[in-house]
Image (tube, each protein chain N blue to C red):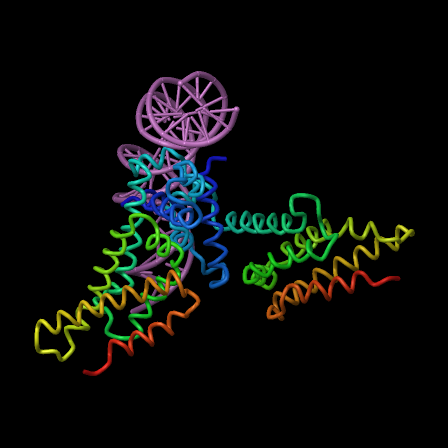
Length: 179
Length: 179
DNA sequence: GTCATTTTGTTGCTTAATCAACATTTTAAA
DNA sequence: TTTAAAATGTTGATTAAGCAACAAAATGAC
């Protein structure tokens, strides 16, 4: 992909991300976004049909970043506290946007995709657990994912004063209880 | 000026500024700068003849910013601690680059231009002093400028651990002694 | 509801940036 | 010293972005 395309798209995503934290979606105009992004309004239409498509692709971009933070591009996943902290640090750095997405209208899709990504991060970890019964393992998987997702949402929306490392330590203890 | 030109130039200035802190000038290649700036190498030559011209114009850009921080674009100058703090905050934020420029080879031009800019910031302040004798006023002007420039250089090169506000308080006391 | 303003979507033309390639120069290694 | 590698400076073709303008649609004010 030509670097100009990458730059223009990234600038628009960054601008959208910033403005979504400050304004409700319906109050956002394309002119506002392009001005913030410092690109021509015509350029917007070279890449997106309308602001709904921008939103969709911006969410995809963020969730891909979340995915990358979970897998580190090297299939590392959540096999260590350090790996998990990468994800929590990423979420912390983008807390405002994720908070808006999790609390705004139509948050179901976003929440659901987040859980799917967390599942990818956690699946090998749970698989490595010494649980012989497949159904028990499935239950453990679902419980862990839901616990993680719920904890992240609570943290981002209610207690974002807590440091990522603190949260990772607590969550790690919870999922590593021997049973 | 077309925004593309502005963006490309700014990207190159920013890259040069960053790399100058990490490498000596003679070790800097144009390829390194353009890679850091994420612009095509050919683009570099649309704007600059060679890396010497980049350096010259980058220095100009920084000194213009220093000028702006001194005058705030509203002729405010150093008539209050707050105005002076703007400049010191700017210098603090760009300490690494200014340190390189003040300590490297050929630093005379840079130091001289810095003094000229500080003079602009300070001239009205000194003019407002109740000193009737023009020669005394001229001496006060030169002494104050030299004191300020020397203090800034010492701070940036030797004691950049000191907070800008601390330094401004001390300098303000020095230049406001009643005599 | 009407009217004014703002925003959107589009068009045509121009400009700046990108890319690959190449010859030349400079630098580094043997 | 010679050779290889890296960097520079340039070229031509292509692509993406910029800009101004305009018609249509949407929004806000009265």
